[in-house]
Length: 267
Image (cartoon, rainbow, N blue to C red; front, side, top):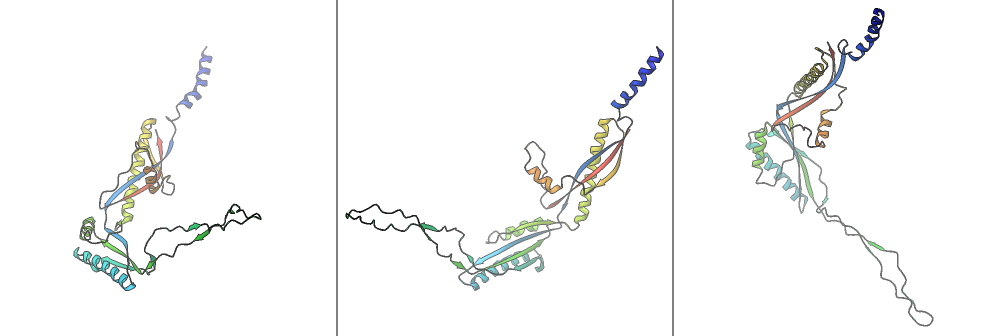
C-alpha cells in the first residue's frame, strides 16, 4: 500500500508544476508606454501670403506694399523689433481674375435641305452626326503681385493683440506654429513619463499574477508599435466611448513620446 501511495505522489508532481508555473518561474512582459509633456511656447511663428491685383502692375505692387506697411505698423505697436517681420517676395504671375470653369459648348450644324426625288417630292432630311465644338474665349487676365510674410511673436497675448490691431483691415493672418526653445528637453520629459506609465502597467501585471519583484530589462525607442502622430489619427476616428487625448492648453506645446519597455516579473 505504501508503495502505491508513493507512486501516486510521484505521478502527481508534474501536474502540480504544470498548473502553477508562475510561482517558481520568471515572467517577461513587453509594454508600450506613452508619455505627454506640456510646456509654454517660447515663440509663435505666423506665416501667410498676400495676393493683390490691379489694372496695371504698378497698381498691384502698390496694393501689396500697402498690406506690408499695415502689418509692419501693427508689429511695431506690439513693441517688437523690425526683424520680427520677414517679407518674402514672390515672383509675379498673370492669373485669371475669375475661377469659374467654362465648359465648351457643342453645337450641331443645321441640317441641309432634304433632296428632291425624281418625281419632285421632298424626301426626309438626312441625320447629321458630326457636331462642332465651340471653344470659349480665353479668360481675362490682370496683373497681380504676391508675397509671403513671417511674424515671430513671444506669446499668445501678442498674437491676440495682433489680431485685434488687424481686425479693421483686410489683412487676415495665416497659419500659426508654436515652438519650444529646447524641444529636446521637453521630449526627454515625455519619454520619462512614458517609462513611468509602462512601469505602472508592469506592476499591475505582477499583482494579478501574484509576483512581487518587477525589474526593468530593456527600453526600446525604435520598436514602438504606434507613434504618437499615428495614434492621434486613430483616436480621431475612434468610437465615442473610447478616450481621446485633450488638446493642449492655449499657448502651450504638447510633446508626446512612446517607448517599448521590457520587464522581468519574479516571485
